Structures are given as C-alpha cells and as structure tokens.
Length: 563
Image 1: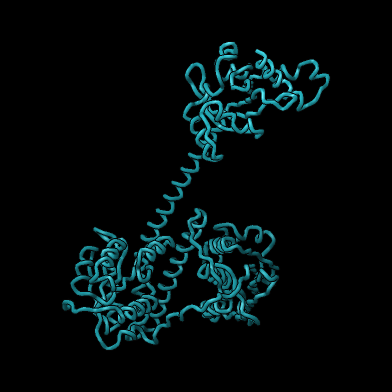
Image 2: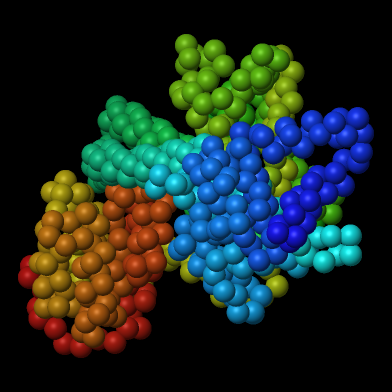
C-alpha cells in the first residue's frame, strides 16, 4: 500500500509541479476538477503497472467503477491485445531491445524519460471499443526513483470518423478523376476519328492534281481552317482537364531559347503576314537554356504570339525579347500594339471560358488558351504576368529558370529527306496498315498512292494483322490501337516477341491522343506514335524514318504481297 500511496501522491506532485502553489491549488479545486473531469480518462499506476487511481472520466469512458480496477488490473488489460502486441514488436524493432507485450510495451519509453503519446483501442466493460489517444508520463519521487505512471486518455472517435470521411472523400475524388480522365480519353478518340477523315481528305484535295480552282481552294481552306480550329479546341479542353486532375505528364530538360523562339516565329509568321502585323524577334546576345518541357514551353509561347497577332491592329507589330533578370531567371516578353486591356479585364484574364467581353467579336476563341498557358508555366516552375494600357497595347511576360547547357553532345537529330519517302529508293517496299475504320483506311490508301515506292496491305483486326505480318514481312507497319479482338498494343507485343517479325518498325496511328496514351504506347515499344487527325506531311516523314531503320534491319525471303 505504501507504493500505491506514493504513486497517487506522485500524480498530485506532477500536477502541482507544473503550476506551482497558490490559493486555487491550495484549496484543492484544480486537482478536484482534473480528477473529476468527465472528458479525460486519468489513470495512475504503480511502478509495476497496477492501477492506483481511476478518475471519473475513466469510469465514464470505460464503464468500470474505480473499486473494480484499483489494485487489481493494468491499463493494458483495457487495450486491444493485438495492438499492444504490435506496439511491443514495433518498439523492439526500433530500439533493438526485446520488449514484452502488455504494460511494459505501453510504458517503455516513459520509463526512460521520453514522453510518449500513442493511439490504441480502449476495450470497455460492456464489450464495446473505441479509439483513444493516450499520453503516458513516468512519475518519480524527490530522489528520481520511478514510482509509477500517469496515463491521460481522450476519446479519438470523432477524429477517426473525420479521417475516415476524408479518406472516403479522397477515394471518391480519385475515382471521379479517373472516370473523368477515361471519359476524356474516350471522347477525344471519338471526336478525332471523324476529324481525321475531314482534315485528311481536305489535305489530299488541296494538294491534288490538277490544282483546285480558286473557288474550290477557298472552300478547302475554310474546311481546313474550321477543322484545325476544332482540333485546337479539343486539345485545349483536354489539356485543362488533365492539368486540373494532376494527370498531365511534364518532362524537365534544358531547352535552348534561341532555337525554340525560331520555331515559334516560323509557326506564327503566316498569320502575322495575313493580318499585316510585323514580327520582331530581338536577337539574343548569348545562348540561353531554360528548365522546362520543350513541347509545353513551345505551346505557351505560340499561344502568346498567336494572341498578340490576333488581337493586334492592322499594320501593328509584335516585339519578342529575352532579358536576364538574375543569374537564375530569364524573362521572355511578348509586346503587342493592340487595343490593350482595362483593369477589370486584367482581373479576369486567367479565368476559364472568360473572353473578356469579346464573345460578340469576329475573333474565334473559348477563353481556355491563356488559362492553360498560365498553368503550364506554373507546372514548369515559372511565372507569367501581363501589363496593359488601353489604347496602347499589352506586354505578356514569362519568367523561367535558367540552367546550364547540356554537357554532352547528343547524336545528330534525324533530318527528313527533301521529297517524301526518298529513302525508300527504287525498290518497292511493302507497308501493312492494321485499321478497322473504312474511312481511315481509305485516307491512308490515298496518301500512299502518291508514293510509288510503297505497296500497301491492310488488315481489319489485330489477329489478321499478325498473320499478314508473318506471311509478307512488310518493311513497316501502321497499327491502330483500338482494334476488334486484340488491341494494337497487344498485337505489337506479339510481333516483337516473334523473331521473324521483331525487326519490323511499328508505328502507332491512333485517335487516342491524351498524353498518357501516347506515353503508354511509346513505352510499350512502338517506333513512333502518330495521332489522328493525320497531318499528311508528318505521317510521311515518320514512315520515311521507319523505312530508314528497316533498311538496316535483317531481312529474309517472304511471300509475295497480294496486289
């Protein structure tokens, strides 16, 4: 009993020592309030872990009366034994010391002067259970001798319920994001498939012989303009959705600014000439490299340049300059001589689908481009801003991180031949196209008809495509992804696994154009991934690259391709 009395006294001493003496403490009001608190379980034990004090809160939470547990049981008897055992095993692994389960596991750190807080499940007298947070502190006498432990516990049910609800909400949000991504991928495919026929055949008609009449060419130009604009809208909406869902894949590489700006200038020049807007790219004194995704950075700058031209005045001009702000930051500025923006318009500039009152104007747009541009810049660790004056014009600027130039020389990039499929030489080569959509097949057939060095075979499903590839050993294969039977990816894997066809370069030609679809296809082993709608020149150059590789691949005699 002397030990028990010392443990209870120790609990009082611990409280007294924390706040000193005073009239409140002298009257015992504070101790009474604490030990009679119904919101916290306060349990004091002796040095062996046997309960010596069991307050009102402990009685309320656990359902035991004090006289039922004092000098009878250990607090560990009221905890989930599996959790106590798991805690003992975790402490043993952490400290490299064998630790028995039970109260020793609960009090191990406290006995060594380490204040400990842990989460365990309390077991009540009536068989129910609830999660609790327990703080355990060692009690020592005036000589530093361990005389017991003080355990202060609180019901953790509300917090656990909140955590569970949060976890469920996060899971639901992730499922919704995944469903949205899958929907966008599917919708992109469904929209691109008819666009492929519209834009593909329009390109063929525009470059056909005899040359279209002036009236026909105007109609063709309108079809192409509307088609490419619709494709641009699809891409912008997909980009925005992917950014918001965190699914957009970005690379990080040193990008040469001078080369990138030259490419952007070439893309914008024709529109600038058409609108009588002058382009002035200030030459760079020193070569600069920035950190970013080259494709996405090009998208950012082209969008700013297109806007600067589109919303400019006739006979206006656009100036592009690069200024080094610090050893780590370069600023790219795009200055136009347009009508400028008001303070109110600037406040809403980067809001999705907000065209700043230009909905009734003649310029097409959705108000998505600048939003995507801003978020792409932020994803690359940069900043974007704008200064504008009504009646004078606007200056958009992008700050990017400067990095060192690549330290190693990479192999020279492949340079396309001057005329389509020049590397095919005089020998007729066979190309297999695996495609189940008749319009897409007819389009590629007409494209390949312009290449006398190529003979085209076609298959309408993956299994037939594999049989044709094994029988005729084509020099190159175009493979759709969504095929009946087996997918284009699976067909490609089977062909690569076959020694007879493993050397054949296979190009994915698909309307699955979401970045993760492209990455998945390239990682699976496609030679290249071309998206629909087809850009005829891009497809021909990709085929030429594949044929160049096929020239150095091993060949063996094969069956005569059907005519």
